[in-house]
Length: 301
Image (cartoon, rainbow, N blue to C red; front, side, top):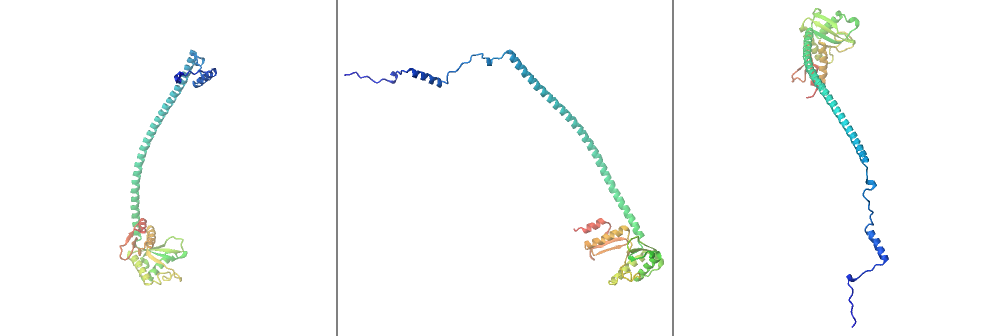
């Protein structure tokens, strides 16, 4: 019986490589290992520095740091100086502000004092004006004015003026004599129609003339007192009789009549130089003393 041989195991297999395989194997081994590394010897020229070079580098670095520190110190010194100047400036500003505050307080006290003095002066002026107004009103207490009278330049003497006054009184049925007229004159005006001022010796005469002139106009609504009535002109022109007012009173009366129209006041009149206004017959009359009062009456409440 022939001898049976068993198959060789893996461990028993010996691989024999040819020369070409050995060469390839070496090449692959070098490629897998990244190739053979070249070794550098210690103390190569690019890593060697001489002591002089090190000293030079250190000196350069020191000089650079010295310049940097010097500049930094200079900047800090400049900042300190700026802060010092700012502090000094702030101190001066504070002193100026304190001075201005003190000066302002002083001026404020003076202004308050001057305002008080002004108010006192205005009050005193108002008091004096009222006293003067009362004096002028008293001087006109027996005076009547006849307005809208056509007069020529040669008819303004006291004789002609007295005749006009007497004719007016006669038309309204007031019996007076020429010697009861204390004075008579014409107010200066560029208007063609003048205002005659007649001062009588008695206040009662004045009140009687004003009362009768109103009654005449009331009784003759279609033929009120006019130039024809007193024998001055063939062409009828209305004339008006009222008590003589002071310049202030005349202006105030004019404004009061205007206010009466705007604010729907039914009555506006004068008595003894004072001005009154009244809404209706049932309401209380109001004495007008100044323009501010009229302004308040115009304002709706």
